[in-house]
Image 1 (cartoon, rainbow, N blue to C red):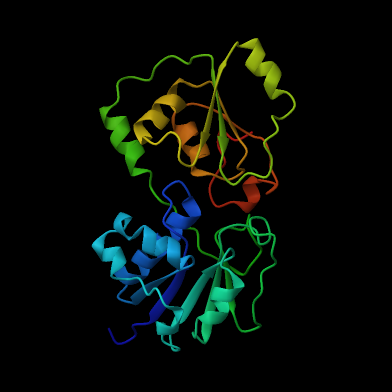
Image 2 (image 1 turned 45 degrees about the vertical axis):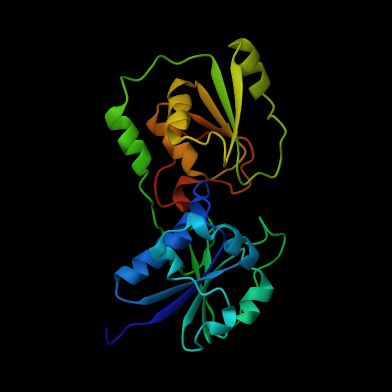
Length: 252
């Protein structure tokens, strides 16, 4: 391809439960589908080497474990969580920062970029950067589950607590009385539990409420599809309809 560009994307270890991580890998596939060359540079090289077996052969073929192997003419893409040491190690002269969360929130470090770097935000909710690149990943497992599942069960006295990108573990005021009123069973979830997506969707369909300590997670949308409202325990992102690319239905 005459206008082909080499993109080097700094990626964390693949974590299916993190939409931001999944989006970085998806971005690579989108760019490759447009005919560009794509390389993945691991943020944590030892972790990558330890878990090589979890990656498909196609994804492994894109990895450049050594940042020094990235060509200077490439365009480097960093999320806001990319460590400064790796940013400095990539020889790419052109750099893009793709903000998947608000800078400082997850790392405690401000974003460090040059005047000629391009800054793109996942959404206007994340940043007022000039450009947005809102990539929505379909929940294919949910589609498969919906086709095979029996009719939705009746709601049970069940409350789910989810910890993903969490800053606090305190139960919000007002939630405990709800749990006591309904004599509800409480199930605590995180990015690795439940391990089975079918088990997760079953819980979401049976629960009366999802309390999430992560203000912006795909789990809230999945809960909405299951008819379960989401209460956001720590809304540090100040979720607002006007700043987000799709409606926040079922979010409270």
